[in-house]
Image (cartoon, rainbow, N blue to C red; front, side):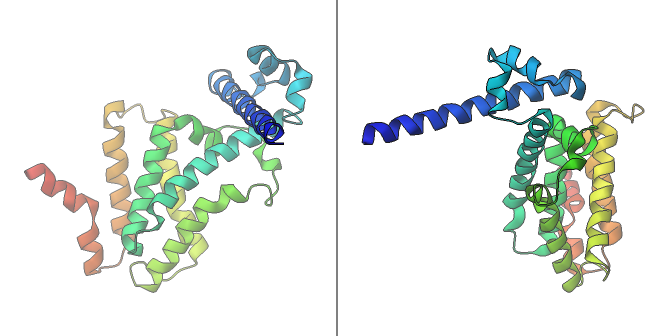
Length: 225
């Protein structure tokens, strides 16, 4: 009995490893050659399997793309969860934005797939893409708390969270897609940090806790040392 259990566990592990290998290869092709280059036959050739074998893992090409989007979404959610435990909603809000920028710049291929690249992810139902909304829910709940504490002006929480996400998304998208050639690549991070600090400071009403929490204030002090 124990031998049979180990055999089943080994097969499951091998199956999961092959599934991840398929996704890794698909992601590599997607980045280098685009959506149209990702085909079941191409993937089968790359990993030396038959197309029929791949269909036992994914029903079609779109299912593979969907799995890649979910993988990227889980990564982003993990990044947000890492700062979710910050007790101060104000500090948490600042941290969420900085974490998002860091994720986008360190994993541009994931970011491109999730938010920029033209792929058929719009076909996904809301039930299928629950993971994809987790990060937004974390942002929105933090925005709600900031409003309750007076750190942000009262407004529709969806609209406020969307506005903040849109600003940061637009900023990193311009740089990832190299639409700001007037700015040298070496200045990207500094520009992102400064623009994010500007947005957040402008949105916050005058509040002693807000002023004390500005990352720019800490940065300037550190530079003087």
